[in-house]
Amino acid sequence: MQSLAAVALLVREYDEAIDFYTRCLGFTLVEDTPLGGGKRWVLVRPSGEGTALLLARAATPEQVAHIGDQAGGRVFMFLHTDNFHHDYEAMQARGVRFAEPPREEAYGTVAVFLDLYGNRWDLIQPRSR
Image (cartoon, rainbow, N blue to C red; front, side, top):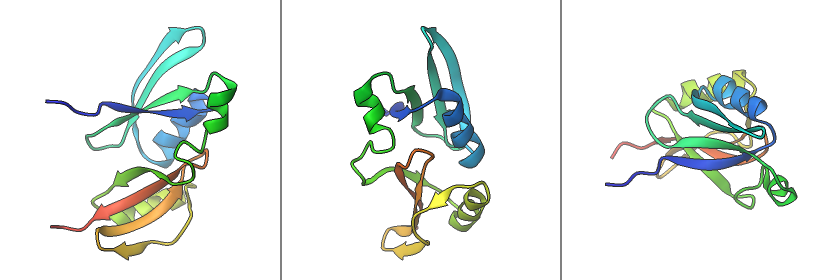
């Protein structure tokens, strides 16, 4: 059996990223281990189960150039919820910027939001099947 354990997300600074993902999105800080040389192994995860984000501080000019544009302007991550309107309102109250109002699609209720670097995310409550 295989599972996707983590996805690396380029960030400017560890602490500002931890603050955004835990305070604004309500994620849990799973691990923050110093690796030496200023590097850290930082994992955050949504409150439910699933894939974690490895917050990876950009270390080269090429990496810095991709902060906030890891998917070339497309939606990069898809955050599922079982209570869309509650999470949408709570995220707005904590300063999360939404790029559009909520809409109904064949697959569920969705709205695009931006993380602190400008990466585009979908907040989705999937339709029951």
